[in-house]
Image 1 (cartoon, rainbow, N blue to C red):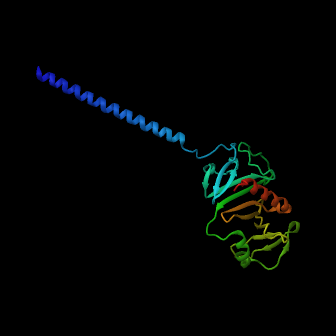
Image 2 (cartoon, rainbow, N blue to C red; image 1 turned 90 degrees about the vertical axis):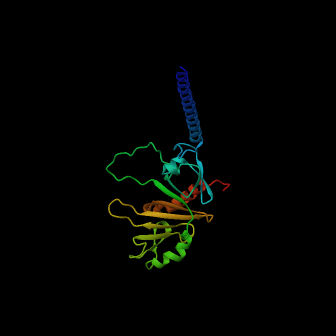
Length: 236
């Protein structure tokens, strides 16, 4: 009889021990889950809604106010420090494209109505002004030619890193408007121009637009200046 009682007591003790361990494990798991949930709720979102207000983004130590709808890649739609931003704006409105807009079916090639903007922190590469003064002249062809609306054009030689490209500049202010443009390709392939600007020795801005826009380059130049100014708060 005594043996039975001890055996029953031992079984009850073991069951009670297992219950305590199980309760402790369940409580610890619940605590871990609660901590993880709190961290998820407090962790900053990887992206913002495209219709959200402009977000402050720092590139190379410079702060830019950027509308999320203008940011081409979702991973870049967050506030804080980034090494690069890829943006797009409608021309000439200089507003982000509507993400819900759908292309209209047409037999004609689509009109190019967008400016593509890249903002990148400085690296070891030469700045735009230095390249124009020290690198590009090594590859120029002979002579300068009249371009659209008072611009001058210098062609790059074939067999160089810039073959099939031309340099357009304003002779009245060559440091203000200089663009390197590819020549139009076969069919509807347009030539593309690159406008480059270094900001405060901290970041480089590159703007891409169709070469055919050079027929109204003064408006393009003014629009680019307005766009850059709109992205930078007055306090930066």
